[in-house]
Amino acid sequence: MSDTVAFTAMEHASRADYDLVFEHDGQNIAHQADRIIGWLRMMDGDSPYQVSRLEHCLQTATRAEQDGADEETVVCALLHDIGDVLSPANHSQVAAALLRPYVSEKNYWIVLNHGLFQGYYWMHFYDQDRDTRDKLMNNPHYQACVEFCARWDQVSFDPLFESKPLEYFAPMIGRLFAREPGAHL
Image (cartoon, rainbow, N blue to C red; front, side, top):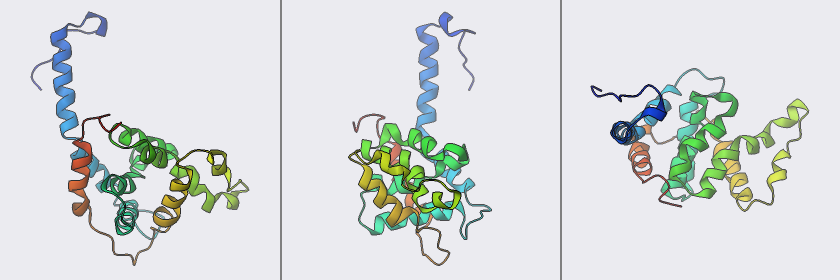
């Protein structure tokens, strides 16, 4: 980028400075899907599971599509663990924050809470309450999150499962992130 703003503190900026900043932001947004695909590729490495983290995501999305989920939900299934690239300790929240401007409240809530709901399958091994998710039982998306985990997420560590390749899902990612942020609300 050859042009830069004139200010060194935001309080001293002009409209022209912010026009330049917003133009740059718009270019970044235009290439967001490509960056996301790059992050997914980063998940194709060593893993303690029988499949890579990328393969887990591909399996989850493939299962969602095979069950007849709409395209937005399929992309959410693909990206539900993308937060592992940036912050494994709160991967669900990172993935949900990435998706929030582009997806329904239901899909946002499922991605945000899927990590807690997956605890149903492992928390009891560590003397924790596997039913912790039940504190959210009154949420209208509770059952959808239970089903997301049961039907698509927790079963997607199978080295024999034939998932669709990342290239198959790339146009879907492009369409989702081409949406006007917040326009679906």
